[in-house]
Length: 336
Image 1 (cartoon, rainbow, N blue to C red):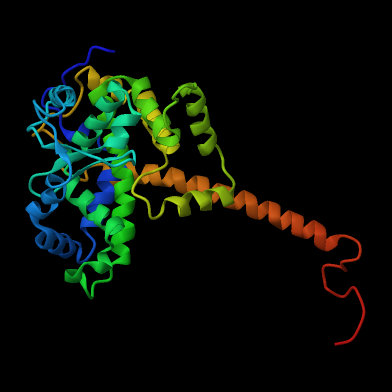
Image 2 (image 1 turned 180 degrees about the horizontal axis):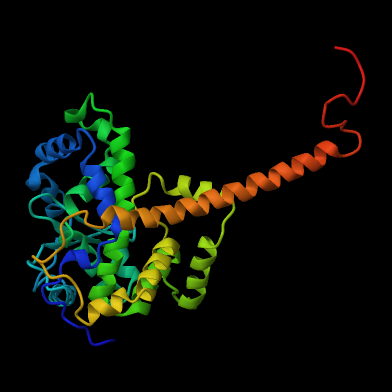
């Protein structure tokens, strides 16, 4: 277990992915978006959200899961979090965790997640959720989860609003927000392999009495992203359009790129923006996010161009082959 550096006064801008910030600002700019957030928050209320878990989950503290509480406090200290948010454990077999709420957000860890991970994996997940809260994601996360659990069309206060653009936009943001929180998870853990193993276990479960291998999984992640065909690209987009999380292999590869860039090491050395010293919003967000999306777009366009060219050549060869007539369409016989 590495010696962790306390990241004093660290700003969430240090770990936020530019595509996350740009997507969130684009989301906020949607006509009527503020109205949706206001109506949903007003309908449920802070207490309404909290009551869901106060009634049927366990709140962690010094006397309740003290080991998990101590681990949580270590994460808060490492990330120099400005406050201590409530932490709940929910008896749910699905391996998941989330940070929700409006004015006073809180963290929920499913029992399935705790059962899947060892202590260092749990540290990473807790730091991931703390990162969400410090980045101001909880309000929008709550809204996104409502889309999946209830459906905005079933919320009476939103009758008459065109909701599909909100659904697609907020889920696109949510997926990019996971990239930011994954970075926060690594900064709270400061153990690259332990953090990557979280993705391995989220993808395929724990090894149990068998062997799981992180290096093999990272090779699999590279394979998923390595020059897929146009059909693969289409399936990748369709498979994630209505999901809150990117695939585990994609998250692992994205976090590995961030580590390889040297940014993680610079932050651990103390080279990061402090709270209150952040650059103005959108200073470089759209440009940096544009680079991210442009690279994805270039890959899709390149794949399409290659596929179309191959199809054109194949069609041309087939059309000129014996028995198919000539290119002017005068070959063959018969009357109309």
